Image (cartoon, rainbow, N blue to C red):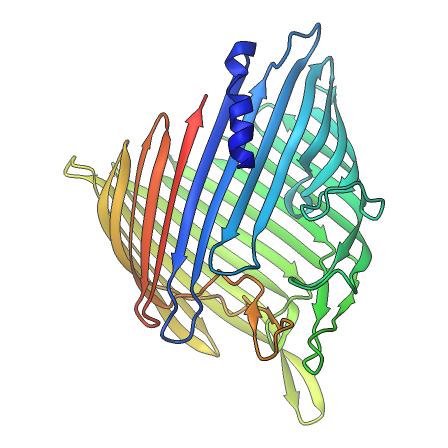
Length: 447
């Protein structure tokens, strides 16, 4: 209802001769209960995104309003309703070299992106350099009142030189209150949080490029004692998550793209019996070998130390796992819009040797698409799916109760799109759990 009321207010925008981009969307998600005990779900979601530019005639600068909000209602449970206002800001930009923003807005780069309730001042200090400073409170959807317990100070700089260099960096200090999901406010902890990130893209020639990024973040971690699920404890470690990524690419001819990448990641969230960091080295080839036909091949090697316990002696041993991936996409076959996409993924490590296959066929055109297919799924062994024990005795609930891992499924998907908006739907059937999933979404665009 709030989104509808706001959209009616925005409908008066033409009278002000503003430039507008307003988008309304709604969706419905239905998941039946699985034969293996998997829970069902019924969710209704809706959202609004609006950009209004040049709200009023000003002697200098341009006044812009940005609003974005979304909500999700759990129709099957009393608890679980979630609403979020990710943006509600007023910006006066291009006043000489300065721009000023007030309200709720996103700020930062990479993993250091955060939502701020406060203000931002940005200045174009050089034709190629822009500096921004922000301050206020860490945005909280549950507590919209000003609260001195959530201060934040952040800064960012972006650099762009012609078409060959694009870089940015940001850092922030904040104080946040944290607790595991679905926990009561009692027992919340406050922590000082430092986040920083940087990225740079260099394009020295028309056929080569290089990209690098660095992320440092202080991520909360907590434990729930199994003998007393009503209590929990948190640990505070500065810069608990570190990620370094690099990629280099080469395109000798337009249809062929080659790239190699390397990533080093450290986090306290580690898989069972493993250390808290790993390294990946990967390579990828993408080849558009005919009009409407593209092939891709990718290989990855991951090195991670695993804990090895021999009696009372504990040590680490390097474990190497590999992943090979290949896919072929063909569209507009026989000039009829017919399309086929097939892919394979193979993981090999000391603990497993598995292959996942995906294939779909259908039609794709300017007005939309329709596909049907089959897939099997592999979940990276380093991905974890944490749970906590709620207050109800004997109940275990996933931190994200609507995520699921499907090992084998048949699916269909379709969409229609036009200038006014879009309609899309998908149906998924888990062949092992005999579980149906249906999702549909519609959106309206006004600009």
